[in-house]
Image 1 (cartoon, rainbow, N blue to C red):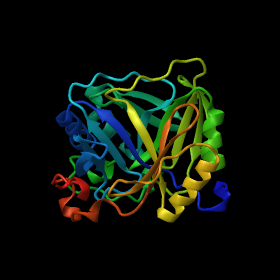
Image 2 (cartoon, helix red, strand yellow):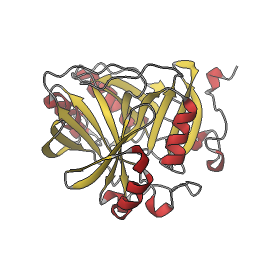
Image 3 (cartoon, rainbow, N blue to C red):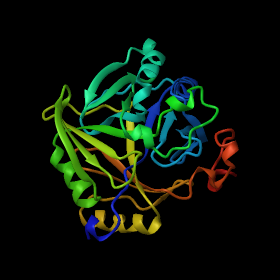
Image 4 (cartoon, rainbow, N blue to C red):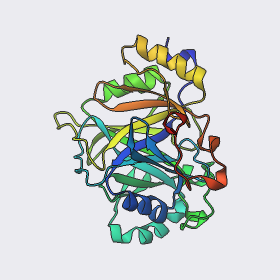
Length: 305
């Protein structure tokens, strides 16, 4: 079975990162970037650790950045075999607003595939990027009305992620041959040869960039490191089809994991990047009203006792 036998993956669902101080993390993503805290729960595999989810008003797939804050954690080191940057879409006319807003953080400005990009570090050193592109004009996110960022300048969900890899061919085999992405563009930049892959969705979270860096060292996991990138699938049946096809292709995906707000399978591609395929449903309003999202500690039923 190949991706041609069922619906291609839409694009990005969420990104999960290790953090250190939880208050610094909360302040940066809600007060600086204007994202809503849509869920406070625990790491289901390590329930002594918080799990924060940030996104748009309702936590739509393609807008969600999640963090495990481990206080006093040692900072990670970027390298091959991991996602090193997360990029949000922003309206083109908002470039000057964000230049001023982020000025004290000294963002680096560049042009990538014709779009202006601002890159900065969050409090733990994670590269966060803002891409000022056409998708930022039409992205169908639900703007959080209580955001400190005016609605006309609000971030429009994810644009892309960047992975550093030893060889791009292995990423191409996974994304194009197995998951139905298309290869969209290539260019050389300061990091290496960058190849962009595009999911089948519309306007939000469409792109995975692979930067080929042969002979460079692998990353060292710690605070600021991306643990995994999750891709979108619509429902359990579609996910099950991918579970079967990825197993047949020797990616050794995990059994389906119940993450309360979506169902997940995990697997690595040959460079070492950890991917997840997550379902769109049931979503973050499954256990609390939209108006209450992020205001209460929510636990899965098996931890309530």
